[in-house]
Image 1 (tube, each protein chain N blue to C red):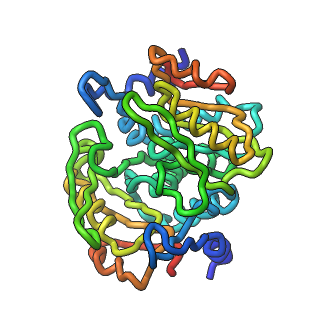
Image 2: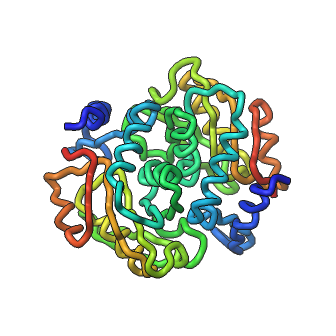
Length: 175
Length: 175
């Protein structure tokens, strides 16, 4: 394994029973607050996109914003926020997705992506894949193409990758 | 006025009656999705910090994350998220602040800032100043020093700057 990935992996803090009993939460704030580790994570994302042309980077609020906006700046691209309902002020498309109990939804501005634009979708965590799939569909509703999907961490035992089979997915760290 | 600031100012989209009737919302997503304008905004933030030494950049979710994380990477600094209650998984400090009706609160991880560390606090918008003041207090609760406060946009008619008199505040755009 790349030494840098090992370094990042080691910094992830396991917080038991968050947000609810039985869940071991992967806390990435120790990566963010360490200037070197944060930079390494961005550089690894950039390397994972070498040779792949995209026009925009889209991310799911809120942790996704941290990595995606930074990578957009580094690669000279625009940034598209995908948010919870009621947060984006202009005309939006909405996509619902299933949770363990009930449903949730995400929105994108209708003019966020132009027809035919190539988009990298980035988030911090791939769990069940429901959120990422909804985000990908929103990009497509705008007429964009989801050229690549990137995650910092993939929880492989949840098989979220199965929901994203039609996309080119890569995660820096698999747990 | 700096031509670049004029350029950013022109890209801000006014959305009437959002999030509620009578409010003219300043939508910054047109800046974000334009690679050049987004880069210019980050560069202007970086210039506003020339000669000022800080160890970390802290930001308030979620729009603040976009600029602050990117600037942290550019300046080689760590990034500290300040979030709504229940979002940060580890031990937190909490600070309540008044809204027009009722109160809201923000949290920071207790180990986010070390004693004596110098922190830049960054957000997209200075309105009444209540949110920024709460965030500054959280940094101080950790033992950090709020060395500088930066905003993309300041709504001067709301006099939020009055609440932040003890800090060194600068906004790229004043409306």
